[in-house]
Image (cartoon, rainbow, N blue to C red):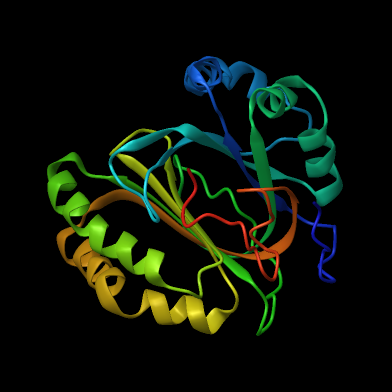
Length: 251
């Protein structure tokens, strides 16, 4: 399924986040191996800019226990047409699609970004999406080894709040390196619901601890407008008005 672009132009940088679900031992072993072996092929994908291969965590937010059945690929592209051509073509991205039992890609327009990812500023913010528009939030951090226990001690409370929040349209925790490099990604129906979560409860307490105790050696916070999506997750698009067969968490 390809959700309409909601009058968002096709020019300017597009960020894609693709989730692949792998069933069966063979497919899961292949996906795990590709975390290292796919890198040369990824670098040769036409039009690709910044990219990252990520595993995922179990639960409704993220946890230190990996989910060996779900992997993600984040990439930047010069425009939506280039992104779609690469995502629906062959090569390594086509191989991922053929090995996966289900795939879903959300195309994103960067609205704001601060911080760095692997020493780079990968996203190019553009015009605001306006009130009442679905938004995505991405947080990426490199956790200092000395505070790992304190950081992961906070995670269950934050994940539980995300999971019980009925405003969240989609949420998942992914990462490049287990325990040390973590990414949270969530989709919200509007700015107000996103802000309400960020400013209250365990999440707000964790943010204060990050600042006071210097938990992260590198961090990035980005906000995106939803451009469109392709494929399905748990048999539907998470952006659908009534995703009746969407599971409570990515499995």
